[in-house]
Amino acid sequence: MSDLTIGIDIGGTSIRAAVVDDRGESMDTLRAATPATAQALEHCLDRLVGELGSRWSVSGVGLAIAGFLTRDRSTVRFAPHLPWREARVAEEMSARVGLPVFAEHDANAAAVAEWRFGAAGHGQNSLVLAIGTGIGAGLVFDGRLYRGSYGVAPELGHIVIVPDGRPCSCGKRGCWERYCSGTALVDTVVELLADAEWGRSKLADESAADPGSVTGRRIAAAANEGDPLALAAFASFASYLGQGLAMIADVFDPDLIVIAGGVGRASGLYLDDAREQYAAMLTGAGYRTLARIRGTQLGESAGMIGAAEVARTMLSDGATATRTAGDAQLARAVLRD
Image (cartoon, rainbow, N blue to C red):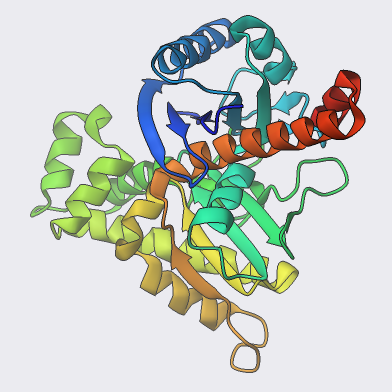
């Protein structure tokens, strides 16, 4: 079996795929925009695997999916930013591409990567927040992923942090990810523009000339240049991040929190302020140990590295079962479980 696997991080905005070795190193990467329909999305995934598989000898594929998966990860039940509903994505893709395919929640995949190769490696109970188009979360307790009874835990991006706030694609209003994500940054800029004049802001001028040009990446770049509108947007982001972290710490009491995902790369713009907000709002502040809060070591690659590692682990477990039992059906059962 090849030590190389393909990891694909399927987000609401973009898809990133990589050939990854057993040290978590990406050997080759591809990127594509996320199609809107299930058929187009599946065609895109098949194309990425075909292109990478033509250049490298790979043993399997892992999918990091932004959505609700069943506990055995056989079915994508619901994905707020993707077109799949009750879809057996991995099984059907495996039949199309001729390789074993394994699905995992995208934030769980990021948590696996950061715990195995990155910033979460020294935490006993670690929370990894993957902040990109939305918010995903992965919890590692004593070296094991926590999935809950039905496989959907912990869906932290959709806790309500602002009652009757911004509408969310999940159907609720005021969800955390509507105030603390890449897309939320854009909404915050729009609201700030409506509330005040920003005469010396290049970002404000760009938004007035072409509203569609304002993205989370552009806001981060403007903030790094000292743009006052962008800095105000990140100040709001940091405040909501700190509030949410305090709520989560009251429930789970982790010793380490890692901020991953696309927005994790810009942690220098908000992480110190978020730490202060978290420390001030935590129940029992001043009388309990604060969690360490770190930026990602793997950046937006964490999801695809983790997905590749999930595939590698599942294949290894299956190979071990085959050697031990001499029974291919047992190997298939291990992969399902």
